[in-house]
Image (cartoon, rainbow, N blue to C red; front, top):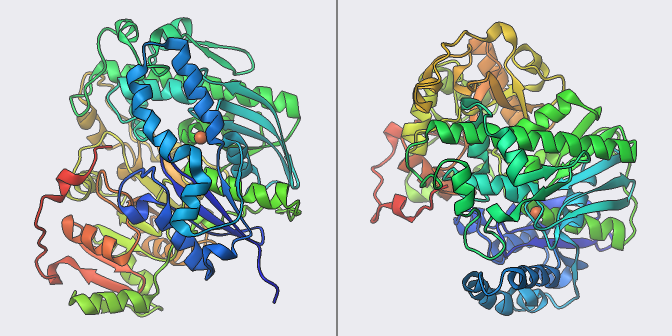
Amino acid sequence: MSKPTDILGISCFYHDSAAVLVRDGKLFAAAQEERFSRKKHDPRFPENAIRYCLSEAGIDASALTALVFYDKPILTFDRLLMSYLTVAPRGLRSWLEALPLWLGQKLHVPKVVRKRIGYDGDVMFTEHHEAHAASAFYPSPFSRAAILTVDGVGEWATASYGVGDGKRIELEKELHFPDSVGLLYSAFTYFTGFRVNSGEYKLMGLAPYGEPIYKDLILDELVDVKEDGSVRLNMAYFDFLGGLKMTNRRFGRLFGGPPRKPETEITRREMDIAASIQAVTEEIILKMARHVHRQTGMKHLCMAGGVALNCVANGRLLREGPFEDIWIQPAAGDAGGALGAALSVWHRYLDRDREDPAGRDRQNGSYLGPSFSAESVAAYLQENGYPFHRLDPRTRAWAVAREIADGKIVGYFAGRMEYGPRALGARSILGDPRREDTQTVMNLKIKYRESFRPFAPTVLEDRAAEYFDLDRPSPYMLLVAGVVEHRRLPQPRDGAAGVLQRLKVKRSDIPAVTHLDYSARVQTVSRDVKADYYDVIREFAEQTGCPVVVNTSFNVRGEPIVCSPQDAYRCFMRTEMDTLVMEDCILYKNEQPPWQERDDWREDLILD
Ligand SMILES: [Fe+2]
């Protein structure tokens, strides 16, 4: 057999560093560094993720055909320098804070790679949005499609569009820093007291509570949106050019005062701001998509970049057109850049053809990370004296489903770990969506937080239409759809009640996953992509009539999703989870020895 062509893609030094191995043009292994280092959104050089990819492939770094970095640091450096010169001497502090890392590591990626993993070949670089575009198009189910990338910022680009056709990608236009939809959204994430580059999801989840009363104000004062969806930010209100903050005092005056302090009460103002910026963002995305449609004449659209994780906007884009279908890279943020960079080398640099995908995506359900055999799980449990039972493969799904149907909260660990921010049934915590207390129990006993966001549902793909207004699969939880009309329950319109009280009102027969506006962040599962998970839900449907489970990520607040059996067991014991299923091993909490830790682990976790 001839030696395979192995390409390693790396993204790092901003947020969510990751490594991806593409073997002979196929996604072979991919993982984010945070899962190994246990530091959420870890931006450091992804040494552990690289080692995992190499070990999955059974090679060491010297056997790689190519190694590629997902953006061009020298261009980013140039942008930072120019931004500083624009506002100098203001911004000196943030500039000086950033400088050592740039001079030490970011500008010297080839040296760092050589030193840390012993790779001696050339290091290639793709541009940031080129990597996003490649991650959107190459794994997509379309042979030809329009491509739209939208994020905070790469080197200079903040959005781009073009066309993918076979192995070719042509990007036609770019929008440039500081004009950025991602940074606009992040400015509001900051202003409403959530963490930038991680709390955007919360801001989106808060939107249904508010009214978009600030929409016109945002469009009049902060951002000029052109007919083609391009934007121009009024920099008099933002501080990210030279400062350490996203917004300035003038921005605060527009919204009646300073930013909300993290962890303080969420007021009517934040809800209305969330609704307003969400409405503006949707309008921009729709305009961009219509423009791209007009310019390219394509029927299908692929998307990537952090803004493509806005699943509410995606759901609208799908419902309101103009594209017949869209596909979004599940690792749409910068982790996915590593994937795009590696595929880009295969198709563009090595000039290798892309097989006609014939309507099926090449992302393998995004189950691209480490897996652990039942034997290795059992060996780990035995070595540590943790009591467990082996499940018969023929009744495994039935037994897991029975736990969920009994109202138990079940940690579910099976197969290869997900690549991207969402848990999709390989490292998930499952519960019964019909029970009114599931939401509260999961939040307080597992996640140690109160949350204004409902959990996400996983539904059997072939029965999704019985529950959601969704006429196609959503395997990556990137589309928001409404719960079907006849399952909805009327709600009192009590805008004055607090967010948590309002969420506790039962809204449908699957209350744990139904948001205030009857929407849900749906994951559909098909048997050919994830058989074990599909079978569990099918058995749950057999036992209860309901083909839906609650699926939340297997972690506690502030912690990355678990990766190994050790991580999973620790999370199981730290929380009030009832049952843990790892491959064919099942553990019950009441049989476990007492769990002791020296320090309060909650102190080590960053807030999200
Ligand atoms: Fe990006």
